[in-house]
Image (tube, rainbow, N blue to C red):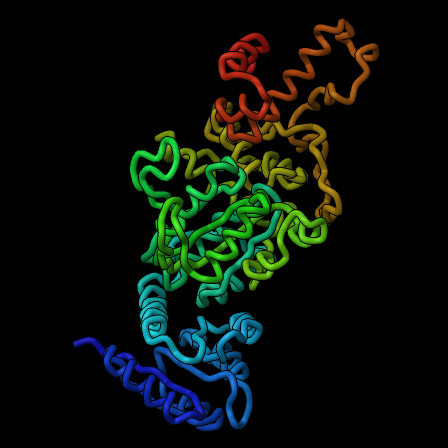
Length: 471
């Protein structure tokens, strides 16, 4: 027989305590009550609870103090706060202090029961999979700190905004938050906000009814409905046009959506995670991103460090990537030679982990033996250095250990009259080759996306690849 779950209810109002005791009792929970912080602290010191519900205002202090104490002393005990209706600031402050979620007075019992089920699911998923199902590799201080923060924010239902440069792994961070939280059994729905045409956004996000517009031949479920009970990840959220930002804000605030052509709104239970490589503070100041939506999605902010700040993580990351790539190719995973490791460690990786994956995938295809040498990496000789990049403190390797023989200078920065291929057609070919190779790398060698990015047809791209001898 399963052990009965328990909950601690902290509130100075007798009627509220009785209401919560009856509601949780009907859900099969054993409950204890406390009228103030002092009694609650005494009970917490003797009993391990599966859940705590606390009022914000107590006779001997603030419920936020109890939230912080439980988050520190009893990190496996989810705590939810009860706030006055409309007190959004207090609710946000509670989430930042480590609260799992919040409910408002008068307490909606349907909302409360859903919250309790999610809190209990959080403990069940943690016991079944204490480390989460995804891996954020790295032992650098930056990655250790990121994983610790993720473990904290995964316990709550607060919206999280993930910032960081392109290629740092923002979606992996979002998936890890989902996997370690109470919604792990629910769907994780990622959406690239920049990839949806503006005229289709409302239908994509909220769904539509048959016949609501030309081409709507059947009812269609929107992304919010698809993510019901789970997590909706809004990647590149800065790309949303202003009219859609207004509708998204309402959906997040009201927890309802209205499909295009529908007469009534549909309730949705979704946790919002978002990400962008742009600075939302700057966009808000410029007026291209709504400040009210910014505050709604940015309750908690996570910054994913660029690869150049993760000193020492390259060997571990490279080994894991090579094993994954080799497994997909059904071959033995090669090792990196010391010269190759040294070459990677002095390269600044403007494309971050995504660029590292591309480099290793290419090297895996080009390497002849069981080891990848520095020249197999074919690192660019003059990669774009991002502004304010921290200076590497490690000693530079000997010349023999540099990545590869010096590559040709970027033809875009050259004068055609100063090059060895001074004929204009040859010079233009060099520029064209450089642009195509860069676009291929940025789009992970997906030729369809590369052609679209270059503004040419797929057939034209194939012709140019053959003409320029690019594999």
